[in-house]
Amino acid sequence: MVKLEKHEMHRIAPLFEGNNETLVWSCLQGCMGHAWVDNLEAPKCAQILIADICFFAGDSRIPEARLLVRNIPDFFKKSCIYVVPENVAWGALIEQEYENRFIRFERYAFKKEKDVFDRDKLKAFVQSLPEEYDLAPIDERLYELTFAEAWSSDLCPNFQSWEDYQKRGLGFVVLHKGRIVCGASSYTVYNEGIEIEIDTQEDYRRKGLATACAARLILECLDRGLYPSWDAANTISVALAEKLGYHMDKPYFAYEIDRTK
Image (cartoon, one colour):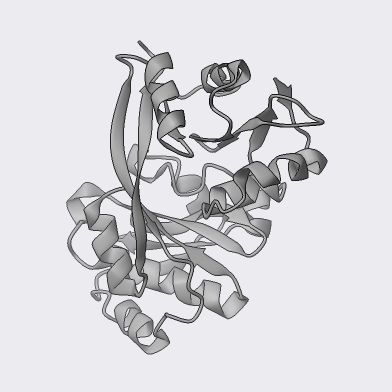
């Protein structure tokens, strides 16, 4: 296996041709993430790791593909890693390598449509936020506060620092009595936009907070010429995305690998 440098990412771009995941684009563009390949000069299979998600593409039948599936780098410290296979053959290989250690689940991809958002509708969602809540852009203090509780820790974790987030990231939070109770932020970034992360503290769900917060982030992206990409982990996220104007592309399967077993 060969770990690619940022300037070498173009070598695996053909293997991921047609992939519509912005996390993959982010790595190929050298914005975030890491990549490995079986052979630098004539790559046949490749692995991308960005945040806590792995993507595989290419020929799953060669021995190097199995090595890539086994590859969880030493710097990755989380107890679980999520894996998205290119096809059923890669899925079968993942299941073989991580027998009794995986959960297979369904996610939902959404179309990347730039002109489908109704700005007036989004503004109405923002204005519908109940009076007892405040909506604020993520500044340095709020950035640090997102790491204080487990439920909000996925809002900004993939940036090196506040300075990095300030330069490349974008997000808003809902505050209740000064405390963060909901957030919408850039989970990752790529040249043309962001991948949205939405989280709400459990006691504050079903109050319209995520709708207002996400709508505000989408409007800000549109104003800046960025695309606010959405990928859903469950049907609740699907319903929210469709409410905001997105259209589903297709469901796909992924794996949660338990590294503690």
